[in-house]
Length: 564
Image 1: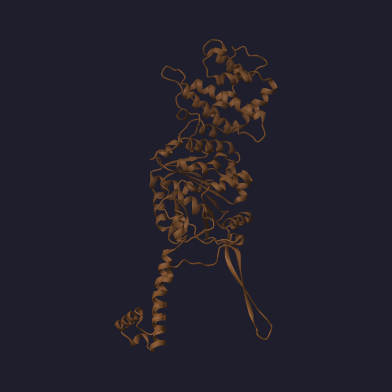
Image 2: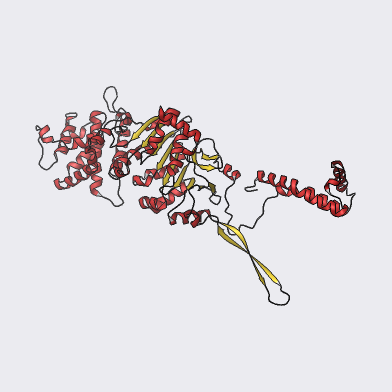
């Protein structure tokens, strides 16, 4: 039987046995034999019941004994209620919550039900909708960073997640701690074109390893598309600017074994005529492109087309060299514009070397905090996209081993980081890659503004759990009231006639009624949240937020770690 609660059935059984059965037995004993319960001893009662079961007593007394004995068994009958013609929504009880796998001992924390934490451990994603000042950080982000013995990847606009949890994670889980803020000198150094990521491309005889070079081209393409993303409508200048970046990146890696984005920018801005006056520069060719053209020829001091350079470099140089001066000027401007942010010496330094190999997060517990102030998010949109999406792609490019660690992404206020297309693919890919994700936003309107309705619908369908805090947005409240749906109620109406007989008629009507209304969600108190699980939307869990600072034991451990 669906949702049958055996625990509740036993409670009903014992209540009927201790209260209703004695009452029925007492009533029939008095009615038939004019005796009270205390008029007979226990053995006399047992003896009379035995005779009644053998039908050796008065028929009415026999019937009463049978009714008294059978009544407790009705406690095990399923509750029929009204038919669910107009919906069967109902709040989830503990039995159903257990079936939802939300009473796990480890895993992502969603809230509290009584004294139990609501947690899930499967590699699934959840969506948390919580307007400002509803306590989403103290109830979701902080508790999960404190309780999860896994590698973590957290968005941290205010910097509070790092301040509260980093020392604790280092002490409790021996976690490596990384903080990413390109404007901070203490930022973890990140260079996607570093040798630690692209590997060695030459063998011991300095011959190019073709297989390794193919990986280099793939990584350079990936970086280029993150810096110069494709636009909805074809943009010639942006496309060609990306090609210049690819050319320079491949050339510098071929020459030096690695490069960096700041180095690519600096290299492109050199005064090649002054640095290399011996070259016969052509008036109709940009000095940078002509320099590369000559350098490639010098590689083997041979004909350009027989040069052993990777063909991609030669093809890009030829294509760009053919462009007219005015055309190249526009292309070069499109190439250089996104890179101007690296004129900041702190940002340039932070992207010139590499300390972060995200694949290592699978082998040892590591914690990455993307701690960027809100005022800096817009100017840093491109570098944030590069850092976040490059590392996410690396995590989801190789299937983890059996003993590899889970990685949990806590994307707090993710719409504020701008449009991150690959981030939206994580929920559908995460299960196979042991990647759990928590997406936290204020409401649907905030997500829709950045990503559009189609992506919002995909995110909703690919996140297995939803956590709804008190809402301010009517659209969000209405949407979830509709998702949860109706339950069926029976409405009775009575009418009386005015004739002398005073007859009356009773009409019954089944109606659908919202289990949780839009107004309920808009008027929710701060100590109540609703949790929805895929395939069980009609059975929401009414729960409480788990605020870490209300857990005295956890708070004591946290204070201890922060004092070390």
